[in-house]
Length: 301
Length: 273
Image 1 (spheres, one colour):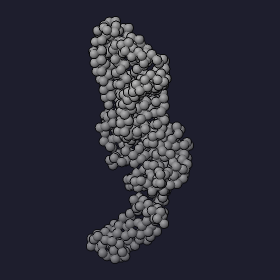
Image 2 (cartoon, one colour):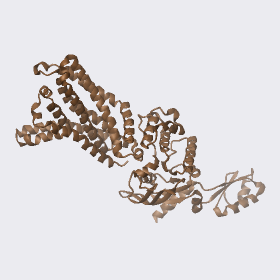
Image 3 (cartoon, chains in turn cyan, purple):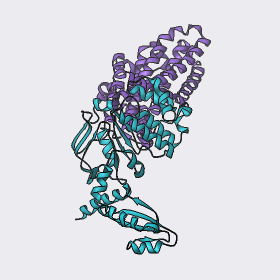
């Protein structure tokens, strides 16, 4: 069941094409990461599917309704980039207001704040909060009710590593309950492990929409093999394996995905010369720059 | 309704914490007390009770002060949300823009009404202390109170409209001060100049009365003066008031908040978060 469907979504600001025929879907229970440079159109796309701004062209369906319609807003939760709240209100008062706006009991405010680790600061004014704490208030309000779609713009910015891990655990629970999640992020390493699918935007165009495994296959980027030789044997290992850089102890090799097993076999054949070997697949960073570059080259031609 | 109340209660807390309520009450209280103290001097000559005299003074005070307080409370309402970046999130909630505005309006109007009530209450108290016969002026005082609230409502809504149009708090503040100057000070001055130049011609007889009630501040003044003979006598302004039916002035006072609020909602709808 798809919760969010976008097809051919285009948005122009004057001469600037912020989004160019973007289309993808997010199914219930699916966690999709939206990645791209600053200005790639991520926030614009989110604002369009929330109904905050109108697309110039294209079709969007949010929980079976038009973006921004009463029916859609009933089921969609949003966490803006750099979530801001009125500094004169306390975290508790802010959350009570948002609960009432969603037609939920304001009594849940404290337990929601507790869930994001803000129970102790609940009765302090938001003006005294750090950026990370404001971000948690933002998360808490996004958890109100049972949203069918969560739109999270840079949700982990300002969070420390432990809170980030807690946050993704929370997302896993929500997805398990059937919520569709669309989140944007700069922190590619965390997205890599915690999302089901990755959508890459580059200068307003969708350049990739696939699982990480699929993206790796399509990009066909070289795999790095890091071989640690026995002391004093690095030169011999480098010579045996023909090529590769070395720094005295380790020898670096790159190979295509197809050659990986062949190369590993050769390494194993060296027996006592080798102490250990690591296989480093291309990171999401590598894949991301690959697809961004491909799209930029395409534009130039 | 829940959503309007949720916004209103949050907004009421903000107004309290921003000390707007305190400032408004202090302003109204100080000016009312000063007026009731200085206003008691001419009572003997006019034969009006002290409260009626005070009410005449309060009417003139309210014309300046109530719109000013209302505009200062409202100019930040939308522009401030845009500046702080709090608007996009609220707009993704199942609440209409008109409901957001009505919530703010409810809280601001309650704060304003409280300030006006305290100010007038103090003035009335002072009048009773000097002369127990002041009870005769009570209906006029009550009328002054609810018309002041209507006047405040009109200017709150005008402030929201300007706030939505300006989109930046600095620009909105400039706009409301400019508007206050034009509607409260320059408007009357230019009408006065036109009457002098016209020298009793068709402008004075046919156009002037309508222009007078077109401005909510003038309509407020006219209605309060026309409705109470004693007050009008005390203010010495019966002439102008006599040419206009009090009902027309009242209609203007009732219409302004509705029209301005509608305009504010329309302007708010044009704001892209």
